[in-house]
Length: 200
Image (tube, rainbow, N blue to C red; front, side):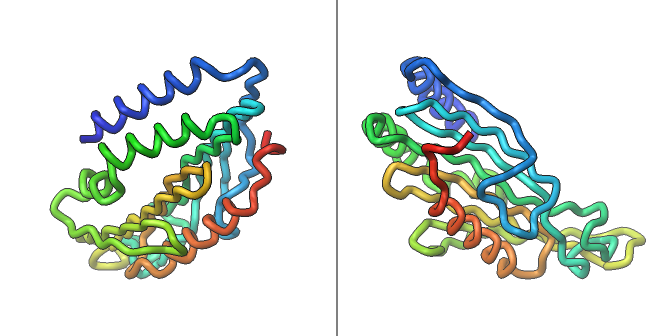
């Protein structure tokens, strides 16, 4: 299923990138537009094709809950991360956005995508500020460590609003999805505030 998703995404990307006007700008930076305030070591790769689309891939490290890690440390060996892939289409490219969203809904819904990575773990679906969300909680034993077991939460949000599409993923060591949900909500608020015409 992941291969299907990648193939579909690649086909869409090829179609999208084959037709934009000249003037494509790609930048890599340590400033991020959408990560939660708690994130450190941010990275951001932005492509702005004027009058066509902005794509953004961002990621950073967020603190782990010590009791949910093997080493009982917030910034130890068990790293927690927040990141997203976002595409915003300008008015002239709405048809391309509609085509992309149609393919995603038909071939790779959020639950389907998360279940593919969750294995036998249960996928819990919910709505977060009007967006579709899903999470999986897994545990594993620790061997001769500070804690007897570690618990990992993988929290996904898919935003489809106006002509913006984004997949948010928070992967963190935590006992519950509460903190991951809080980070995802903060990211949704930041996405809504981005001025895409000035992104670079």
